[in-house]
Amino acid sequence: MSALVPLPTPFKDDRGTIQNLVDLPLGSALVILSKKGAVRANHYHKTDFHYSWLQSGKMIYAHRPSGSKEAPAQWVIQPGQLFYTPPMHDHVMQFLEDSVLFIVARNIRTSADYESDTIRIPPLEIRPEK
View (cartoon, rainbow, N blue to C red):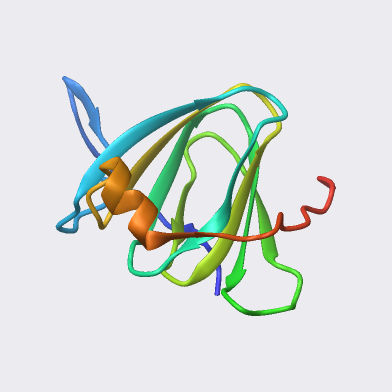
């Protein structure tokens, strides 16, 4: 299963373009600014899922079903790509450049709600970019 999500054809007219990213009832939207070399996640969510869209920068995203001992599937994410993290999937993000990442998630992301649904895991191994 690929984490990459194909984007629908954007709506274009003389005013510009509208690119739909996700069309679902969702609980939160956030922007994460990450510096080159930063590593985020190394956790899974019991019920939450999220769609992530990289506006700028470059990153490696990896995930696998929680409890698996297999190496996680891994993708190099470029600006304009959308990817999906399902519930109960260990995941990690390593930023190869300063990056701006937009995330829309199923659950509300107040600190208490987020922490009650998030299980931290030992760091996942990321293979170097090819």
